[in-house]
Each structure stands twice: as structure tokens, then as C-alpha cells.
Length: 204
Length: 210
Ligand SMILES: [Zn+2]
Image (cartoon, rainbow over all chains, first blue to last red; front, side, top):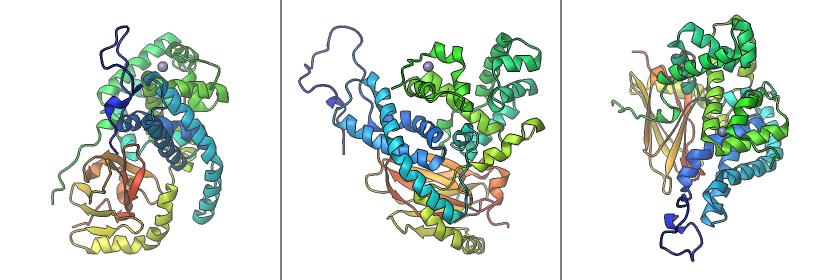
């Protein structure tokens, strides 16, 4: 169903440009909505539910509801959108939580799996697909050892700047500066996740 | 809504991202951070990077002292999405037959018609790449293509508007290449609701050895 881009805002709004501060930004299309919020909702839900597949269900249902609200113009202005999406995701999470828990128990009986409650980061790192892990690993391998070890302490061991400084005989300020530089060098070696959609010729 | 209204300076000053990932925040503080990163692209990018880095370091053997995390990380790897799980029961039972069929087939091709849906997909492999093509689904705006390991881990995920995806073999880890893998395609509308889904199609990422 097509959605007219010009349909945001009250129907009786005059067509002449309004004086005053910057012109109001347009509401995003449903495609833009999904692009912007899909992964945020998955991270949000994975932390709460502790699993990837439940997080995906929450993301789908949330975007469905927000898309409907956009079409029926229930969101007042673009800055309110993020808060609206967040609150919707919260509601969906709460509603799905119980039924998902039941389904998972059923699935675990079938697959012989046991429920696991590990480190909260584990449900989140499970969102990162194998291919992206490899790409980040390759970029990390291109860094010098000191940079890589610093990032490992910060992101893998999840130490604070103070704790890292104590280990490296440095100061928290110096650690922050070094981490910032290491991240910049890493970014030079890394293509953005969203740019990974290049197609290959099938070669057949 | 949580009482605390966060801004970027407060996020940096309180080291809240790290506490969020470690699971040491109160629920109210975690929600305040979530409400913030839904609206803030800078803090969202930083959180994404932190999650990616931790994922990348998991399984990268270098510092033996940190190896204790690896087994815990593995314990909560992605499992099959429930909707896919229904079909994997069938496919797992048939997978040894499927993969041996694939090995026998000189072209290493497999065409499978969706059982529950109208999606028709075709997987093929050549020396350098795994390729999946499918027939377009009416009303679909894009397609989400995933390649699963036998344990349900997502190896590759692509969202494309085209009806073909090709991935180089060397974008898979050595461990993933050694095992069978399963393609799945979802046809999505604008808000990523699944309109149709293919059944799982088995491939052998190493391909036929010639
Ligand atoms: Zn921020």
C-alpha cells in the first residue's frame, strides 16, 4: 500500500512555507524506519529476552505497530518518533515475554537444549553474524599488538579506563586517548556493516 | 519512561555503555540508556561497535587468561528462529541425504520448492562463491537471506532488493566451511514483516572436491 510522503501533518495545514525556525523534518518512510530501528530494537530485546530469535520477533512486531501509527498519523512530530518506537518495543517485549518463554521451553524439549543464562553480553554478541565477526577480526589483526590488546581489555574484558591504566602503568586519560586512536585506525581497516551487500556474479 | 534523562556527556562521564553490557545497571538506568540510544546515533554507533568487538574477540585465541569467556559465549549462540525451527526438524532428518545428493550432483545444485510458502529458491556453488537465487514474491520490498550453520548460528545475513545473493567462500570462517550450511530467505514488506519464507536449502560450503 503506497504511503504519500506529503500526508504527514494536519490535513488543513496551509501549503505555503511556514515562517519561523527550521522547517519541520518529514516523517520517515517505513523503509527508513526499519533501517534506523531494526538493530536497535534487536539489541534492546535481546538484552531483555536473552535470545536472538525472540529479539527478532519483537523487532518485527514493533515495526509493524509503529508503521501502522505512522500511516494513521498518530505520531505528532519526527522528534517524538524514537521515543514512540522505544515505548512500543517495551510493550511488545512485555507481551511476548511470557508466550516466548513457553515456546522456548517446548523447543528445548524437542532439541534437548537447556536454557542458558550467561553473561548479558552473550545474547548481544550472538546478534553479530559470523561474517561480520570475521571482518572485525581481520581488521583487528591488522592493528599493531598494543592497539589490539588495548581494545581487548576495553571491549572483551570490559575493563574501565582506570582498570586498564592500572594494568598498563598508564593514566586513565592516556588510556582514553590511545583507545580513541586505536578505534580510528580500526575503522580505517573496516568497511561499515551495511556496506557488505555487494553481489557477486554467479559465475555459471 | 525512566526518570533519568540522559545526554551524550552523561553517557561518557558515567561509563554507562560498559555497565549496560556487563549487566550491572539497575533496570531504570538500563532503560534510560536504551531510550537514549534509540534517539542518539552517536551513542548507538558506539554501542554497536562495543558489541561487535566483543563478538570478534570471542574465539580469537590470544590471551589464555580470557579464554574462560569462550565457552560461556558459545553456550548462548543464536539458535534457530522458532518459525525456522519447525522446518529444520524435517531438514535435519533429511540433511545427510540432501548433502550426499548435493555431492553426487555434478553441478552441485539444489532446487527446492517452499513447503509452507510460495517461495522457490535455487542454490548453487562454484569454485569461489555460494549463490542463491529466488523468484520474486508479490508485494515484497526486500529479501532477507540467511545462511545458517547446523547448530542454528547465523553465518551470513544479507538484506537485498534483488533476487540473487552471492557470497565468497572466504567470507566464511574455516569452521563454517567445513560443515553443511542451510540457506533461508524471507520476503519482507516495508516494515520487515515476513510475507513468505523459503524452506531450508542445504549446501556444502566447501563444495564438491574435484
Ligand atoms: Zn548520545
